[in-house]
Length: 270
Image (cartoon, rainbow, N blue to C red; front, side, top):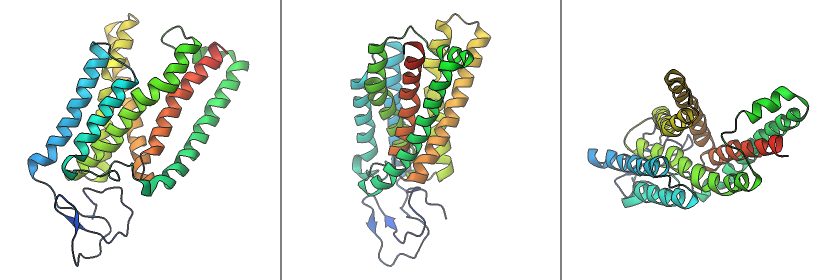
């Protein structure tokens, strides 16, 4: 039977837990996953709503008030971790941040970083000899780039203001809390990915309207972004589940965004 709470635990575990403190149940039967007693109905959903509320406040601060940066991202991340771990709702292991899975997470991360790095390197080299590829890369920029801006974004803003908050929230806290509320592995990943897709509505809308596109084009751009980021969220959620660590999806997310900026710099300014 699928574990509704510790959905990322390896098969063959003989542990069973009951109650908010997760004390071992003496004489628990052998199971294929860790089992915990479901908390009261209100306590199941309140922390999920609280995490979504923190994300909503962050989105208001960044999209409407223009408050951005690493400090805001780190503060929101700490708030989400505090909500998720309060009263023993989730442990560091539940969030994918346990030292027990660090070695496995590092190995998966190195493999995927090498894969993405190789892809970006090949694209960068081809862009130097194939004008069509260079034109495609340059079309991805949303503003006139310069080295200082790209460096700050790639090394500070993206890691701390984007990757950290999004991975802790959408691949760490929300799946753990959804599992705690009784969701299966599949639904914990899918629902978190759908929320991740909706998270990108505001920036995609701002980007599309800022370019003066007609209404139909704006709608298509927003829908396309939501579909793409939802699919990406499912992939990152699968990676989190398989690696049992939050590190690999963080590395993939960082590599995609930061190496993408590096590719833009190499083709445009290099």
